[in-house]
Structures are given as structure tokens and as C-alpha cells.
Image 1 (cartoon, rainbow, N blue to C red):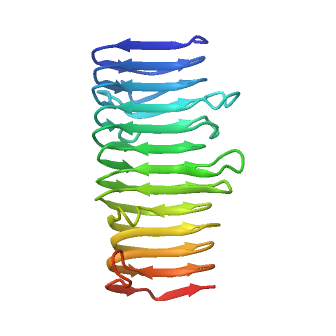
Image 2: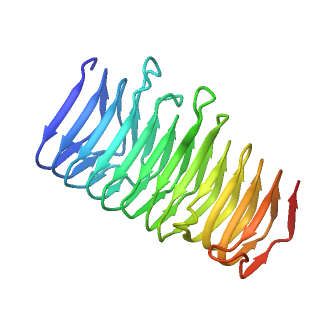
Length: 277
């Protein structure tokens, strides 16, 4: 259809395949189930906004491969894909796309519970969980121009689990925030700066095969770290209280800092190759 579609209710809503010519808006107090068959796309040329004010957003019975798509014509204003629930957002292996060719932002929020999704491609990705955040596929964010700012920003107070996260445009950062949880990933590569947790709120642990800030700084804070490689285009700072174990290369193009969280030294630092300019 070339018309907008708006679904509003107070109870549960189940939504199958949809193709909308302008904006798609789904709002209810109850739970929302997405997908009803083996392979479906819920998409619109404009914005896609799905909101459960008091419930959860999950996959529907019988849902197989599911794609959520905004800005499907990749034209005009970059129309966002926005998913928000009071409780859990459990989308399984669903793909979240801001445009067919990465032209719009994507955001997912659970106010009180966890977030699970498959892949996400967008000009900017924001994930804000009440507890844990998990993505079983790749998250990539690449602006069409040299954007700046936190192009991938994920908050998981009790844990963040990623397969890969990548930003592609000059100046595009990745920031992962957790309060008490672990951060696990295969690969996190930021075109500019990469920041994992903070000195005030360090992760319980960071486990990753590759951490890289191509043109910027890499800053990571945790009680313990187990890494494959840690590479920074400028400065690199690893802060941990107990142990930093690295099996591969540690390299900073400017300054390299290895220190504790509350003391000047970490209990154990083990890396076979460390270089700094």
C-alpha cells in the first residue's frame, strides 16, 4: 500500500508480513508478536515504529526468517526503525535494517528487561536494555557521510553479548556500557574510538577475539580481560583490577596504558607482543 498504516490497541497484537508506502506505527499496552510464517518482511518506505507500553515484543508463533525494514526506498529523510517495550524485546534471529542500503538509524529499547536480536544494519544503531543485550549476528553502522558521535551505542546493565560490531565512516565511535555484567564478543571494530564500560562502572569481564579502534583510541575497563588482539590508531588504555590476558598483539600508535581500576597496577598482565609509538 502507498498509505500509512497505524495499529493502536490496549491488548495483544500479532503482525505478519507488511509493506507500507509511508509510515508504519504499531502501539499497544499489551504484548506484540512479530511474524506469522516462515519468511516475512515487515517494512515501510517511511518510519517503522513498534511500541509496547506495558508488555513485551517477541516473535510470533510460526515465525521463521523475519526482517524489519524502515526507509525501504532509501530516499528522502532517513526514516528510522524504532522498537520499544516496557518488558523484554526478544526478536530471536530477526534482521533489523535501516534502509535496504544502510540509509537510516535503528534503535531498540527494553525499559526493564533483556534485548535479543539477530543482525542490524543502520547509519546509527542504539540498543538500550534494562538487563542484558544480545545480538546473535553482526551489527554494522556506517553513515553515508563522515559522521561523528557514538554510531553504535549499546547499554546492557547486566551484560552485553555480541558476535561482531563494526562502524565504517570516519569519526564513527562504538560505546558499550554495562554496570555489573560481562561483555563478550568475537570482533568489535570502530572506525574511530572504541570504549567499553568506564572507570566508574567497569564490566565484570571483557572477553573478545578482536578489539580495534582503527583511527582513534581504545579504552576498556573491567575486573578481568581475556583478549586476542587489542589495536588502536592513537592511544590504548586497558584498566583491570585482577588480570589482563592477551594471546596476540597489543599495539598503540601513540600512548599505551595498562593499569588497575583502583590502584596503579593490575594484578597480572600477560601478552606476547606489545608495541607503542
